[in-house]
Each structure stands twice: as structure tokens, then as C-alpha cells.
Picture 1 (tube, rainbow, N blue to C red):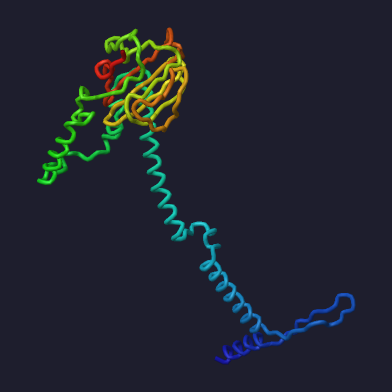
Picture 2 (spheres, rainbow, N blue to C red):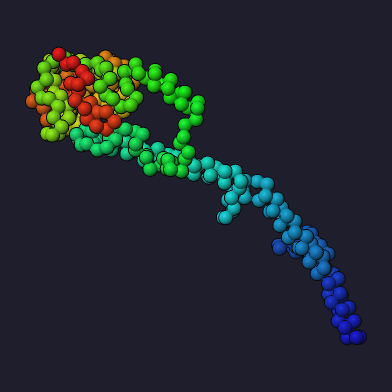
Length: 289
């Protein structure tokens, strides 16, 4: 017991033993500053300094933007921004895929290839539509009344809503002699109308230009998309008056008759008419004389 008491006194004496810290001038050995210290004072002071330093560091990280530079740390604001950007990216990817598929179908029209719903935007993403078997499709009373009203109004529309193209009334793009008629068996899905060079080529109906570029085989080509799945194609033009995205009205000049491209033998208009992705004979709807 006495040994433990002596050992405790010895430790206490070491902790409280005074030391003098002196700062001297190296050249003259003149005493500049001196401090009286003990081991206990140094330990307490060092501990307090470390606690204060940890506290200040914590406050600095917690209440300043510096915390965002710590690996693995993510603020709520950054998480919200990341989530919003993810949704926008998914939407942009969907729109990009939609546009690429639509442009691929337009290229097929230019090449004269037949494929279901070539120019029908609504059919491009049929796989994303709901399964009708899982939805109650029985019309309600208000829906039946609305259908009857729409049917009565559409009876006198230029475009029959059931897809009967015989009711179409279209503006002639040019007037002239047909040198090559529509022939689906020979994959000539157009009529070639001979006309004077640089004669105006006009839009057959209201619509929007979806393609207006030069191609090696058909020269200057312009495609106009109209309502209800109708698409008109004008090839071998000498020049184009419209660019992609322009809105046109029936009878508005969109190009000039020419003789451009590899697949041409003289000034004429190669005119195609597509309805819901299927080529139709333009002579059935337009008088070119």
C-alpha cells in the first residue's frame, strides 16, 4: 500500500514539476521570452488545442461548400440535381431514338422501299402502348355521343378519318404530261411529270417539310408531311425553296422542276404520294393536265 502511495506521489510530482522554456538570441544568448511549464499544463493545453481544432474542422466541413469535396459525400442539392439530370437524359435518349427511327423510315421512302407504317409516326413506338386486353375499352355514354358528333363532322372533311384516301382533294404540284406512270409491280411508286425546266413545284396540301437535301441518285429532294398520315415526295428538282422544318400551305412553291441526280433523263418531276406508309397512285387524287 505504501509503495502505491509513493508511486502516486512520484507521478504527481513529475506532472507538476516546473520547467522553464526559454527563447534566446543565438548570437548574444540574450533571453527574449521564457515560459514556466509543467507536464500537466502541456498535456491539458495540447488536449484543448486538439479538441478546438477538431471542432473548427467539423464546423468548417458541415457549414461550408468544402464538404462537397470530401470523397463519398453528397449533398441533398447535388442528389436532386443528379436525379433531375437522370430523368432529362432518359427523356432525351427516348426522343433521340424516336427521331432516328423516324429518319430511317424517311430514308426508306426515298429509296422506294415498302414497309408497314413507313411514314406513320404513331406506329413507330407501338411496343410502348398499353395492352388493350388489360384496359376496359367499353365506351361510356359521353364517349358514344362524342364519336357520333365527330363522325358527322368528319363526313365532310377533306381527309376521311377511317383512312379512305378517295376523299382526298389535293393541289397539283405541276401540270404537264406523264411520261412514266405509277407501277407498284416494277417498284415505280410515282408518276414522272414532264414540265419545263425551273417551273414552280407546289405543295399538294398544308404540311411541314421533313426533308430537303441533295441525293446523288435523285438530285434535290423535298418531302412534305401532311396530316392524317399523308406524305408527298418531290424529286429531281433544280433547286429547293424550303428547308427542313418549314411550314407550307397548299399551292405554295417548294422547289423548281429540274434534271438533277443520276436517275433522270430530262427535266421532269418525280412525284410520290404515301398514305400511312403505303404508296398510292397520285393520278387517283390529282389532275396533272
